[in-house]
Length: 172
Image (cartoon, rainbow, N blue to C red):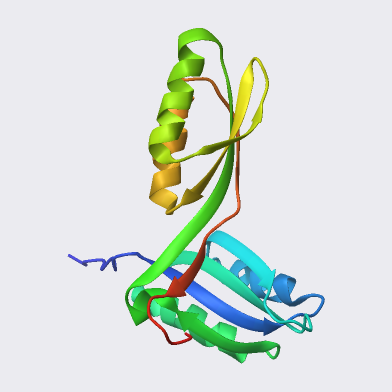
C-alpha cells in the first residue's frame, strides 16, 4: 500500500521591498497565479520620501517547501530589493484596519455600541439606523468582532489586509 505524505500548511507573512514602478504588482500576482499559490492578504504602500520604493506585505500559506519556493521566486524578480519572512524571523506585530457597517434599531443598536466599546471600535459614521465602525487590530480580533456583529445587523465589511513588522529596534 502506498502512503501519501501531506506536509502541514504554514501561514507566513512576507514583507517585500520593491521599486515603485508600473506592473510590479501584476508580476508578483502572476508569479503566485502561475504556480497555483494563494494570496490570503495583500497590501501595498509607498515607503520612501521620493516615492521610488514600495513595501508589499503578502500573507500566504503552504507547506514549508512551497514557502521557500515562493521566497526564492520573489527574490528573482528584477524590481525586488529584498524579501523578508516575518514569520521565520520570530516575534512580529500584525495589524489590519476594517470598516464594519451595522444596521439596527432598539436593543440591537445598543448592543452593537456596547460590543464596539469592548473591542475599542470607533464609530466613524452614524445615522439613526446604522453605524460604520473603524477597528484596528490583529486579524483574529477583527474576525471576532465581525462574527459578533452578524447577529446585530452586519451589512458590509471592508478590510485593508495585513501589515506587519518585526519587533525590536532593528529594521527587517
